[in-house]
Image (tube, rainbow, N blue to C red):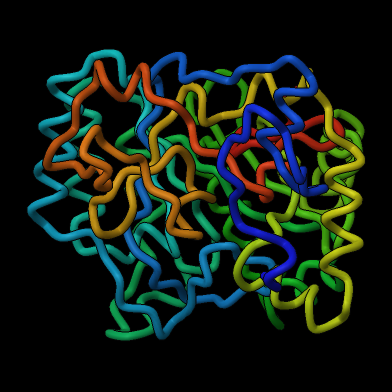
Length: 345
């Protein structure tokens, strides 16, 4: 981001010299205090390696990235899950999380511990495999079904043109094939117990349309054209950081987008932001309030002012931590709100 759009502005009780994108000041003006409430979800960015390099990707994931959670931290993750029954869900993301060599071990052991496991699956990794080693990932749908993994798939739109424009040529056809295969295994089918959710991101610097209406459109169009069924659609606002922010900046659209997000601030959506019930784990084991804070290096800090990691995970302290907010948080609180589970209001 350019210097006049700060990543974070620390809380200022006097509200002096308030910046238009001072999220903490907006909370104070709205008489909101957003404290952490629980540790219901542990979201883990296993790797920044991905078979795609999508334009809107806030992680800057690509086939060239090598960052990956060390094996020792996979073991620490499982220890944390076993010791913290409050964590009921493990949300695995990336990059393409399936490209981490410890992915399947983590899924199997987390399910053995009785945790719900979600994977942020881009659908095409099943067909493309590992871009660095060439290893096949064709078995993934069967693996997901065998272990009862909830699959959350990105599909920017139900039309080929818009999906390929955002994610690359040929992505739409592979995505449709992937969804049909998941359906064949029972995903999204009534009574199967196998959950298939989709994710919608706007193609440009816009707020998502109404999630309920979008879901109805997706179900109608995917069903009639391709026979695809799914459970829910999550509408997620594009985050003005990293690759997407640079894309907007090159087109002189970043400030207008920030103005749009700030102007659409919704206090009701803010009350349900995901960071209140979630802790995010970076690919180096550092802990964050959310995946977006992770990407701009805004970690959870301990009493000594140092970043907290999996090695010193303390559930009681994390539950009462002060969440760190920044200008990018306007994306989660604009309009109907936005989280990894879609709209919040």
